[in-house]
Length: 261
Ligand SMILES: NC(=O)c1ccc[n+]([C@@H]2O[C@H](COP(=O)([O-])OP(=O)(O)OC[C@H]3O[C@@H](n4cnc5c(N)ncnc54)[C@H](O)[C@@H]3O)[C@@H](O)[C@H]2O)c1
Image 1 (tube, rainbow, N blue to C red):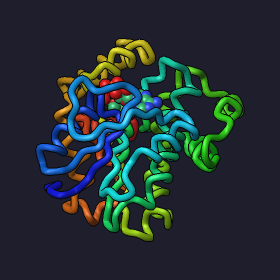
Image 2: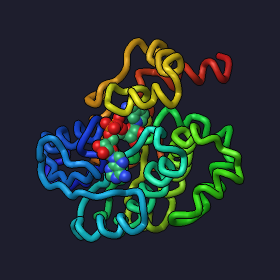
Image 3: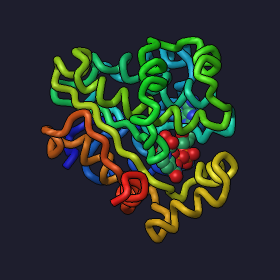
Image 4: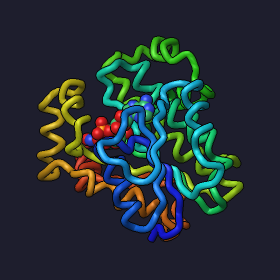
């Protein structure tokens, strides 16, 4: 499915990113992993890099190749480090890296963003999401958080709301669309990786356990990786600006509760 393609995967050193990298290699891709931490096992090429600031992204971009087929934006943090840090990594850094690398993606290439069911509230919080997404580059995140009175503990869901909104926008930005580069998202529900324990600190055990109970079990990285790689593949050539829930039915269940059907 991915034979001969070169795929850059951020967050390769743990959880979902590690499985995306392994599966992409098994499906014939050349994988270039990116992470702030070293991977336990080296799989293909690896570039150590941090997506949390403009300067570190410039360094990272300098170490990545001039041509490749897909960018899988998997790296992310849980929110335990505070809202400023979380927005810098999960949204502004992800977007800055994608924009920096867009000209290197081959015609017909793909960007896949790992968002989350936690971003479900983007429609309900649309004005706020628009203001954060409209701010270019790395804005003054603390000032934006203060303007919208966002509590420190809500950085994670906010970061994923912004990512879902931007995924739709980016699909139509000339930077991507003019060269046939598709931009899509997958939104996992709770997945058993190191970040899940941190979610328990941020959101509390009852919330995490209720989400798991709604669908019968937590996901595994191997449940998410095939969906992300499908969106990288030519089989998804007519899918653009979409968000694919990969959550065992959690979003459907929440829709039923929220919309009352
Ligand atoms: N596990 C879940 O329950 C779940 C649910 C929904 C969405 N997600 C999303 O999936 C993605 C992957 O999460 P995971 O579950 O594999 O977690 P994880 O903690 O296992 O992996 C995250 C990886 O991102 C890397 N990373 C963190 N900050 C970075 C930075 N500044 N620069 C470069 N790399 C950085 C980490 O080193 C780590 O290897 C995240 O975006 C997360 O928000 C996870």
